[in-house]
Image (cartoon, rainbow, N blue to C red):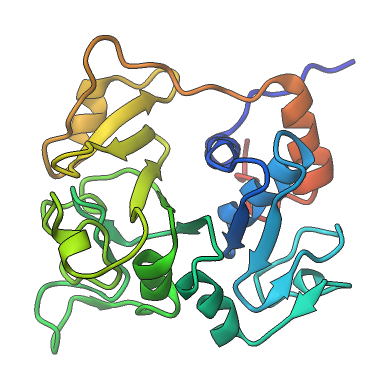
Length: 262
């Protein structure tokens, strides 16, 4: 029998994202790797989660991997289907335990930019998609996990535009602004897992992907990363059984986890 290939970078991110989910949580699911992570978590260590899709479907029956949160599979025999505004209202009313969010830029305090590249609002270098529901999630959800690729242009000292609030200026500034919840609690990238130092709320390395070093992660970051005391743990990799579930049951067509050539 042919041995399984090691997890590729996208599969690694999906697996590590799934580990952020605890059983019995209400999980707000967006398009892409967060969708893979939530389904994987349900099929492995967190079978009793409630999946809330952004488009309004609640806990549809298992089916093929949806292409997006607007895919009919996110509604099929759902216990409840509601308008998108009401799904965001679930976060506002405290019924969402964890949500995931991508970014074009993220700073040391977890503030996210998905609006523009370039500081001039009227003449940006690149105009991006904007907020959608992103600001709702970071402002209202109990815990936010950010996910993206790790590069200096994506991790600048200051984002060009704050689309979605993280810990604002650090410290207690988020709480003083009247925002509920814990804000960003982790950032999962191809470099590793980062969290936020409890007092300053500055981004800190929690673990590093196999083969990654702190110095290399720092080179890929536009601001100074904090590091924990002692040795930095290695991010866990999926064992063969979990990798088999990911590839054959969660995303068998490689909609979000296949990398051409690998």
